[in-house]
View 1: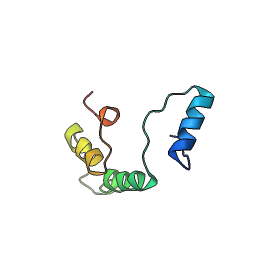
View 2: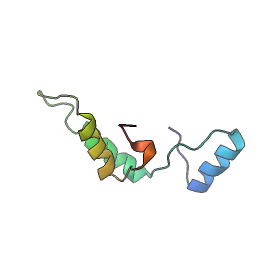
View 3: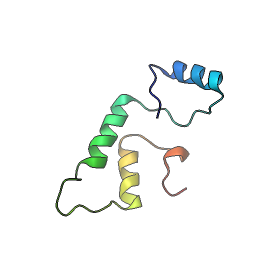
View 4: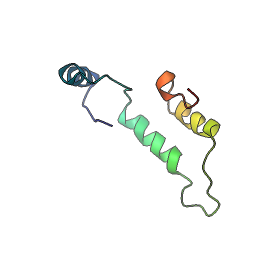
Length: 72
């Protein structure tokens, strides 16, 4: 993961380095993803979420599209 100030900075970096852009998302989306993804990790009965449950979390924070599809 790379952090940038703006989408324009992402595009400039990609052009300068010839590294393709994967996905762009906001710090707010990253924060919301972290809250939802790790909210139950300290519970005694913790279990790994199913692919479907993980996909719902991504969808809820607006991380949609082919890049974010967990089922290919």
